[in-house]
Image 1 (cartoon, rainbow, N blue to C red):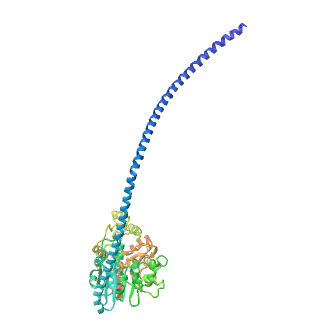
Image 2 (cartoon, rainbow, N blue to C red):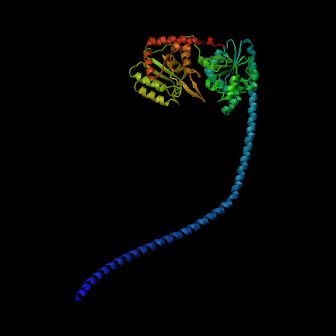
Image 3 (cartoon, one colour):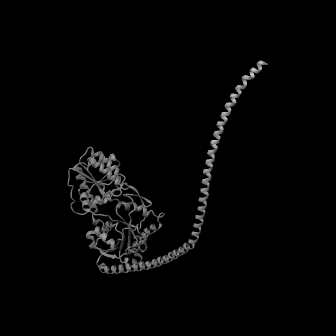
Length: 499
């Protein structure tokens, strides 16, 4: 019994110490909970205050919205009234526009009548001279971008023996005079007035009253239309009235676009079947047209230039060999990259080379101009022009050249058709070779006239071009080719083409 009591005495103090420790922890936790409760109460108080402010703001917004609605209601009727006024003004404006269009249409009709009356009067006055000439030829020139072709047609028409009349409008005649030179005074002119301040399309329609002039045009033996394929609809009345007594000649510039247009442009195709004959700039195009089996159609060759029986100046600097690429610098038309690559390689070994890009590099040839600048900085003699080259400088450089280089991209797309230079479309390289009596260098896939065969050289790659140029850096070779070029140019004498 005594030992049991001693055991209880040992346990009771231990339990008391444990309880004391637990009580302290509980008190600590209670204080923490009390503090947390105070924090929650503060937060709740803040939220209640914010809620009051939100309620107050909501009431204020509701009041403002109500006021805005009332204001909108008050203004709606005024706004509807203003819109009604605007609609009325628009209706009156449209009515005035209709009246103006009607008035303008009447003015156009009156102007067309005046054009026709003036044309008939001029044609009648010029007609007093027709009886003294062999053949009566009319050239319709209602655009300026073929002025150089008009000049060629005038020469072919032989104004000395034939009666040749050019029908055009005031503004176009001014531009034609720049290209025609002395030929201006060799022909008779029927210059029609044209409307001012109207769109280009409307002007075109007004300055082509062909349907009203058909009776007068029938007084000619031949009517030549240089730009038929571009304005065929305006020339339709004339094309449909072609006869054995009046030969209507339509000039063809893009053979595939025109003579293969049965599905792509049936109207153009129809009118081309109606005209009497065609005209092209190069003989090779005549061969291509023959493939269409239009056996009843005569095809005239109207070269742009003819050989003139006068001595051509020889190159001034015989120590240098000048290669000229004439024409606007445009990568889509010519492969300048291949040429610059070849001449860049050659410049490392030959110092008597001179390359001239004879045409403006703006706006199409900026990249080519940069490459030329780099070559020039490295000491290579390359010459180029950023803007239009004056005619005097152009002629001087062409006359001083040893060779004409034509790096044509032979295949290209015109409108919706693929065309091929030398086959379905004329190339300017032929014209330059004839006019300046120079040998030409061209890609081997470019077909050239047989008449120029002995003065035409071909290359296939940049490497071949390099080898060809090296072989031409000999004055005797250059002189021999120049003599052949002169002989070939004589085959393009004007006497061979006179109508």
